[in-house]
Image (tube, rainbow, N blue to C red):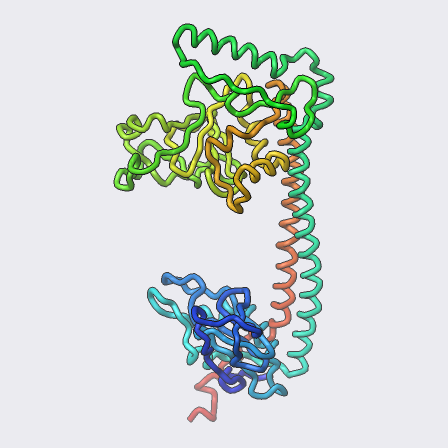
Length: 457
């Protein structure tokens, strides 16, 4: 084993394919990204290590996410350089790839320079010194890596499969929850609970009285739900209701955020009354991550877009997982353009139960996608929500469902944490194997003591 410069064991050649203008074809095109593109022509027909010459993140930050290995006929982007072996009896190019990829943050990244556009020069790469083991030892390391890589791939595939099954389990839990299957025993133990239908009749009587007293306006009567509209059979005491049945009639039940010039960028503040945006919702939870605020005066002008504790907020575009309840300890605020707010009659519908209807019920999700006209990216509006139907049990059973779902989801969280831990352990195992393989090659030889060296004269 000896210490050598890369320029003494490698040939260097910069890529000549412009990534923006590359014409797709039959040959792999190596880029700075993890995935290969294609090209109609090739530049190389060999085995090579391909190193990006620009930072992966840019903006003054030095980093390299990828160091590629490629063999056969391939094209190379102009912002990469290919290293090939001068003598395959001296250097196994796959060994060099493992070496540079594993140690890129210690060997390559420190050589990057530049203010805004951080780059890596070929000259600096040529001057890198490595401790090179025998060609036999290089081959052993490569073969060991390939063997472990296969095992790691199989393990990761199994872990990914487990995550898929876990996701399906969560959806199954929610589907059984809204069909009343999770709380069948609860209904047997609580036969005297006021049903959703009776509660709805009582709320209607209260509304009629308020209309008579002219405290609220009379609303258009809602048409009855036909049997053909119902998505599945419900347990006794449950009701199929459209969202307008349980919107809070004492305040604006459902609104979207201000559009146009209602809230201009010049009116954004660093503090004041918060404006809730998409960043407010994370993994189905409300977060205090507001980036925009307005003055109390402006908030008063836009009071019709107010959202307060207990209200449900939903992202108007993206996935329907982007939904949460504003907690009771949160201050009220305004909703932004990309949110929709729903105020529910809390005597009729539990807000957390309502969120679970959106977060994973396969039946509700399928209907929602149908109403969105087959769009790959859901876009919610009031018209779509008003067309949906929701299974509503008694309020007591809704709360029992929430408790049951949260208990089952806690078990799912534990299983997911184990899967994630196993994934981390698999990656750490691979890193440990490579570290062990390179433990000797990364040790820098001691420099001779110049005063004691008789040849240094």
